[in-house]
Length: 173
Image (cartoon, rainbow, N blue to C red; front, side, top):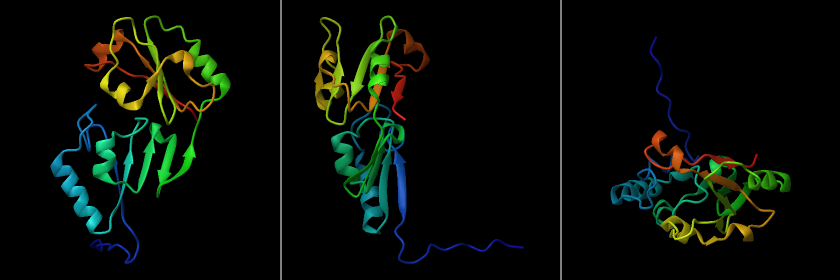
């Protein structure tokens, strides 16, 4: 018994979804390699719909421009946009935000994310990282009590486990 080869139904759009880090771009990167951009453009020219799926709060601008995704799922699926429209966005409740702010992780830096900005307190003398500047960062004291879509804890003692600063992230459910 041989398996019959299935064919795609005519007239239905195809969708290919790609992760960012380690798939479309290098881990922690911000630039789409030219060969990847060309391959994605070829797929688009064939009528294939493209989607980005990532744990990041937003794909870097150069990646968004290069991929021209039809849909994007960020914050580990907590925010979903398709066709230029927001379809779902999970947000922390006031109680969730208060619990995150009351953390007892000594030496951890907390970053709160909204769709528009990030909120973080940098140690004295430490310059913001490029991604913080690109996202528009503000002091943690200015963080809103509503509209928080993601919280990240950054701690130097977690570095040995990933070769970099591990970022345990909480997303609203």
